[in-house]
Length: 333
Image (tube, rainbow, N blue to C red; front, side):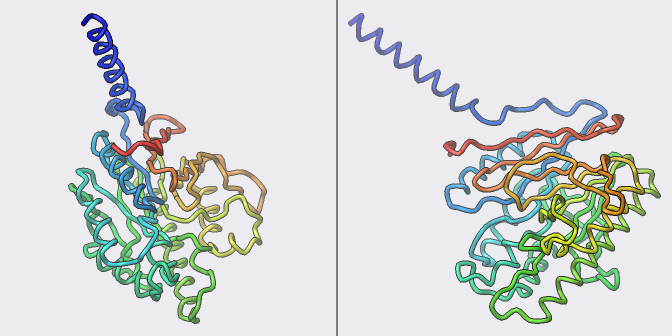
């Protein structure tokens, strides 16, 4: 009897230890933001597979548990197919969060939809559906408590780009611009036409104009910093004439010029590379000088399902700090 009781106690102790281990072996819960600071979430490039959907729900649960001003999704909200059903599923996930959610599209959900596994859609047709479903009211973000946004909607000659948004928080100016992977949508695909080529140019011109306007506003309000978000990794490190980098012109030249002129801190948030990165990659090509006031964070992506907590301390000269919060690949509860 004593032996049985000892074994029972041992099993109970091991079970308790396992519960503690499994419940805590994940992203640690951060403390609420103290006065003078705020935090926001940056995430994207997931879920791609059915098993990642389970982990993605853990990400959403973690977002809910955090003290966040808003959440910023930089696109690639799924892999395939590019169906209205999956659009509405992601919309439901965003609107199910108590935080405001600002979303900018990635290539997976429209540009790459010509692929057989994605449905063999016309990319521009899918982009129109995204605008109808996610940006029905471009003056409001998604999420349980929407933010009021300024939008490029209705502003000629870029009135169609309802997805380009801008807002302020604690004096900082934030903006999304629609730049995507797949070399900014320039990759060849069956049935590609000159209309598709022209659409890339129009979208990039709109993004460039919105970037310029964002810095004008930042100057007008005396913003201590600017945050720009988009999907694509635009190849900051690539040579100036690399075709993948050229695909993002004139946006990159405008970003260099504005960063050099603005001189205050700038944060660029993007996805596409699926690897968590924080660095200062932008070099002014006319002088070869690294622009130290611009920081880039690339969010983790499939198979790493998670998000980045960005904390802003406005009184500091370098106001941004980062915490990667990834769900372990074995964790499904």
